[in-house]
Figure 1 (cartoon, rainbow, N blue to C red):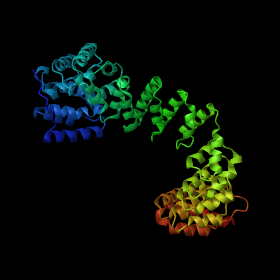
Figure 2 (tube, one colour; figure 1 turned 60 degrees about the vertical axis):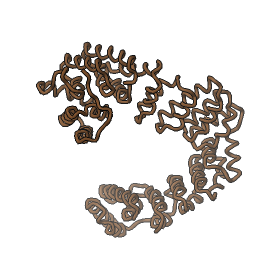
Figure 3 (tube, rainbow, N blue to C red; figure 1 turned 135 degrees about the vertical axis):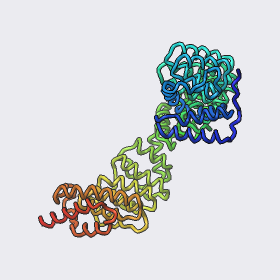
Figure 4 (tube, rainbow, N blue to C red; figure 1 turned 90 degrees about the vertical axis):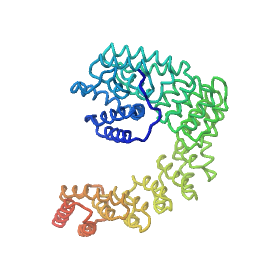
Length: 510
């Protein structure tokens, strides 16, 4: 008997109900699937079995959970299920998850007698069944079915097989699908899987058919696919092909890609092809990994990568990547040349110069202190990071002035980071000021730090923690209480009480 599966997905109310049931079933974890199975059966009785099973197959993880739930349901309510011979498409699919192995085996036999793409995921499930008779029947049938009807191998079956392969006895179906593709499945089957919206399906298909694809097709995937993993797989495959066939232009094209992973693959291929001298053009690549590969290639070719970076910096107009490159291979002797870039008109160059000086351990404190007012937020942030080890030596008055800058949140955040490295009382004063800041992120950080510091001071009974520099500025307790009063609605009462207790203890010991 033929099972009538509609190939179109009409917008009937039963399918809308099923979509809602699938959404709720996915959200509620391992609770009962009674609503979902009811919606599936309603769709089957309404003549929408194919569309209903297509909807379910779009969620293979849910299908596996439903499989486990149905075994429990069939065991507790066996009279609600029709005989296998009389089951419609949906009922037959659900009976493949019956707790009775004989029922599952009958359902498998009926699917094999009248297969369809919508039922193939259920056959994939049973190919990993724990009962040998069911499992063997499903496996033998699946192998023959894929040989006779490779068009049945669609994304739903592959996605289900990818999940079942993680289970004991669950890898058979995935191996059969891989063999089908690798052994020469019709082009339409491979194309359907390679064009699937799910990246895991495209990756699986590409791994299986890469040896059959032409270089231009592999390049298309490497350059245009949205999935990073698939781009990497395609790039590796096309690079191997280019090396074997000496198509060096393909390697150059990969090395010039906008994707870092492709550039790494292309550059590695050029080195393996004996074209290491071409790597010099990648010494200033934005990617640290590509720069490292290019430096190694230049070294093998007898070149001097550090000299390249030093020359670019000495010329006064290096790219940001060239500054990063010098930071990666330079030393303290390069500090003067990098310091000269702190006044460069390009903000990115200034920021990279600050970072390079920090990485080389040659921080010019006066020059970087001036950059705390730089018109670039990136430069200000890098300067503050570089100055953190020297925070105790910076003028408190200057940092306090920067913390109240009326226009620039980046300047206030930099000042706060540095003041937070000072003694506890100074850090608390900065936190109270920040707690009232109009910038949400800084205000949130200030409130959090205020609570922590207030608790610490309250527990310490007024003692400082020894973080202040010798001769540091004292902050009167009355000033801190006044600042706390300004931001009182933003602070928990516990923190305010701790501050009052600390202030009283400090006044008593004065």
